[in-house]
Length: 474
Image 1 (cartoon, rainbow, N blue to C red):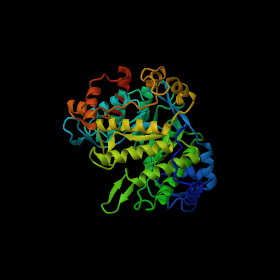
Image 2 (image 1 turned 90 degrees about the horizontal axis):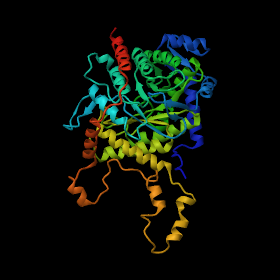
Image 3 (image 1 turned 45 degrees about the vertical axis):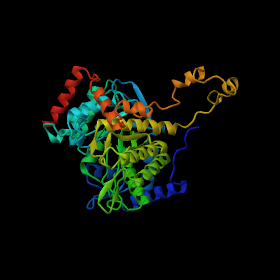
Image 4 (image 1 turned 135 degrees about the vertical axis):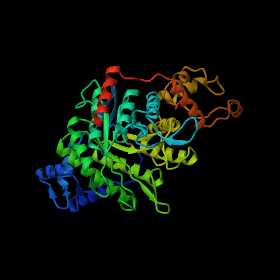
């Protein structure tokens, strides 16, 4: 059987958080720092305080929006071919996104990121089995116009993989140009087929900034799905308790879902969540902590309750090194995200609280993801896999199972996870090959991928992307 979804909330606790979120939205509302959205919400009959710039969302308004939100949607690759479904509770894994620094494969030192880093990272993603979608890993720092850094990153991703694209910005113009880039590369109709997802975030506690709301209003008519991703910090922009942190995140997410469905009922949306806890001794924001991982499980339960595709961030670590802490924080955060049933899990290749990327970390995270998926898939038990007849036929102290047809059949199936980097050989053999740890093996594998040919667009499509990028300066 398949592993049951991990749970940390009872049905009553889910209802308690849901009801508290609705009461927050009805009693104090949210601040909306956008005149266009305020006027629209007032037209829709919501109570708007023009002076305070706050909007009250009624229970009926939110529940109506939840009822209009699609429970699932299909996603396509750059060639217009079906890729996967979001909302079927079979977790999809995405690499990136939006770090700043890079660990150089040659020196092992952290440095500022470049467009070339994004290109190679994306080419590696294109070849990794457990990477389903590609986010922009870093905001490259070597671009001529620093304000356009995300556009250079999005172009590098689109040009170097056929896999679907994930991006986020709080700048309306850049968000719109990212969507134009998707259109330039995609042969289908973005209004009906999903090739990219735009992540747009509220600001805690309980307010929406002008640029983000402009981006939402411009994105909805395009058909590009929006991942609403609140990012409250426990004890700073949300209550310190985990239940309070979840409730803040949930209320902000519901307010975003409500506005989107009022703009255009049936718009594809993702219930996103990426809380941060805070180490009050140091002031450090944490994304790989035990507590954020508990919240990942709870958030999946809330998304299942609302019947909306869910998105969270993992595998995450707050350490700055590729060491044991990095490994345990990443493995636990990814396993809990997969085993809780999140639909899209974004952050492979990142560490140091999401500030740093490396190709080696990407390869390590892809193997972690493969292991997590395999455990969550559970055990297949039927007449063929029990193999009673084979056991009886072979008998006590019978011939080896090594050459049995049954063994050969399952050897090439999905019963076992194929190792990517894991060291599994005997000590002597391992030493003879240089006694390399998995980070060193990942570095060698990254060098191999660097020599592979990129999965490029046509010259005309690349020219169109360059034209869109150049339009930003104008």
